[in-house]
Length: 397
Image (cartoon, rainbow, N blue to C red; front, top):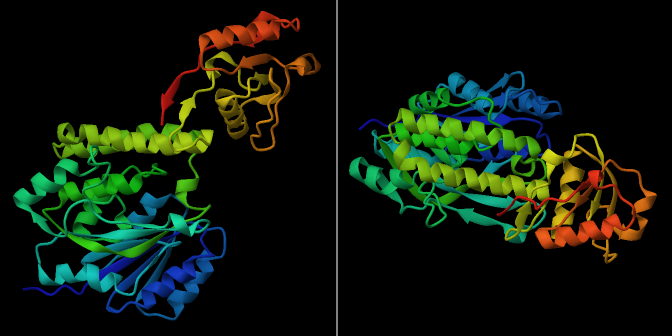
């Protein structure tokens, strides 16, 4: 039996000078110490690069790569190409690992030469609300999956078991270790332009190429959720990324002749990101409904007055504030409600004549209510050509 001690841990770093030292210290505190650390600085503009260089200057097993910013995919590719280990693991620079991380994930490789992937859980750490912290582990029982067991118990729910709302194997690559050969082959199939969801795509590519997967039921990786995390950066541009994400996952599945098996799961994966984006853009509750702003009826750059302070009106105001595609002239309501949205407070319908605007957007979900609102607004000698009274497209998140 061959003993594998050849491990490279790849640390990707971008503008995380507040956290990178903690990450690196967690690696120097490992109970297993015979491994290489490859740090990839992806064009950081803060003090991260200096911290990494100082850290590497004191240790022979640490190497730093400085590159032009290209995103997570290109940074990980650079790390894999530079790694000398037969086994590779990944850590994001703002996260950290337990002292047993390397030892526990490497052990199955040391005991079984045929293992391609070792997967463990991860702990989500919320900076602002520690009560939200939770541990996520794989959706299948711990142990070795190969051959028929891999095909029947893991691959059918590879992306997501959409009936149980869980993953067979968690979509984070950072709580896994992989054969370097598989890691490199899977990374070649990635779209470097992906700015979110890339972990799920990469794990999909890895597992479709793997012949055996060993699952651990413990979490050794700590994934910090803070304002700088990618999960807090969803915005309007993220909608454009959804198609790239879907196309990349579909291509990987088709190349492995698994698309028909995984199609429903890929669709479900897309919906989870659509939910995250919509919740960020519209700032709605988990069980809320999204009402889409009638952007096709309003020219970009126009001055708009939103009439209606209910749920639809509040989402319209949030949309305008976040996208900045329009100039908000005023927000009004017949009942003079005082529903706050950020710094915006609706005023009385009686004040409409005081404002200059290109359009009045009526905000309501029902056609009858919209007709009544239009009648109310027209009492103030408003031109019907300026009124946009359309039932908004809506869907449940």
